Each structure stands twice: as structure tokens, then as C-alpha cells.
Image (cartoon, rainbow, N blue to C red; front, side, top):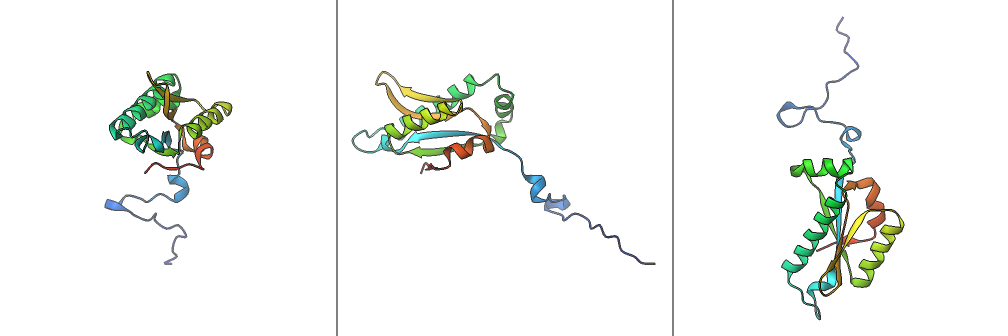
Length: 145
């Protein structure tokens, strides 16, 4: 009489909804990484922040459009409110081009944006993909701040 069940009710969160265990919450988030040259806004180049941001937007859209046949990219663009982007910094043109070559060698689809008519590599954007597939390739870079 009065034996208690070994099972407990799941913990409750906001408004009494069950809180998922960490292993249940883990999903491989689709993310787009963008790598931007940190030196563009500094002397001697002194680009405006607007120009740098515009170039990053161009690269992002170009990488998405190039990958539109990929089901992961399709999912990314249909979930506008859940889009994730991470913006990383490359110190200069040489390092940005090197990152692009390494990604290419590893089969990671991306768009290296070249500003015209100056032919200046400014940034790159990786095709949206699962974080676990791309993060290890860019883990040495710091956030763009």
C-alpha cells in the first residue's frame, strides 16, 4: 500500500511545459559562417562600415543562391526567424584568401566575395550547413568585433 512509482514527472519549465534533457535539446543547428577582413576599416584602406557590411551581405546571398538545390539550404531559407549566422574575422587579404583555399581543398562550398572593379577580396560566406560540419574548419578564427 502506498508504494511510490520509480518514475518521476519530468521537470517543468515556463508555463508548466516539460523541460527537455540536454541530450534531447541538442540539434545540429544550421548556420552560415561569414569571414570578414578586419583590416578593411583601418588605415590605409579606411573602408566605411556600410561598405564592409554590404560586401558581407553580397557574399551571404551569393552562397545561399549557389546552394539552393541543397535540402539543408532550402530548410535554412524557409525558417527565416531561426536563421543563425556567425561572423568571424580574418586579419587581412592574405589570410582570407588562405582560408578560402583551405575550405575549397576540404570541399566546403563557399563564396569568396571580390569587390569590383578593384578586384579586392573582402569576405567569404559559407553555404549554410550543420554547425558540426563547418565549425571545426573555422574554429581557429575569432568573432568579428
